[in-house]
Image: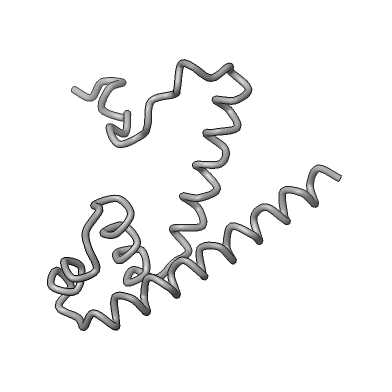
Length: 100
């Protein structure tokens, strides 16, 4: 029997109780924008960003884990970050257009 707890994503961050409700909402909105932009990236770019920024792996560790050259890791990270920044920029511009 499924419960309401089964639908909760255990990886979602808990709200920061030190923030007021508006700040909590803004933080959640920013996180959603980043998640959406992150999902636009290719699997290779998402993987390398996740390993570096969330798993805190070194470039060498990532290269070994993925079975690629160190230069490939550096290139993918650079490109992934540039693509993520572009995707975020598009989303922010779209939001600004909606609020005008």
